[in-house]
Length: 79
Image (cartoon, rainbow, N blue to C red; front, side):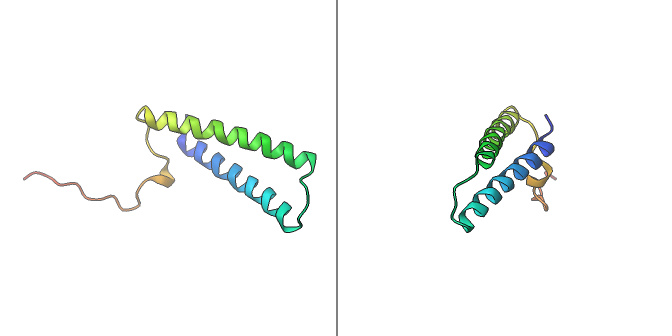
């Protein structure tokens, strides 16, 4: 698994879900059947990606680049 690609896709899906939700809230209307279906599909895909990334990390996989510290703390070295 590529954790960077996973996280990129998670963020894309999350932003898409929020966009659909916000657009519906702005005009106070019901979601169209297409919007509902898209939200269902995106939510399921997002859940699968979250679980896959959690499994990756739990098994010792590295963090996605975006989550890695920009300025890592120096480690103590022994003289």
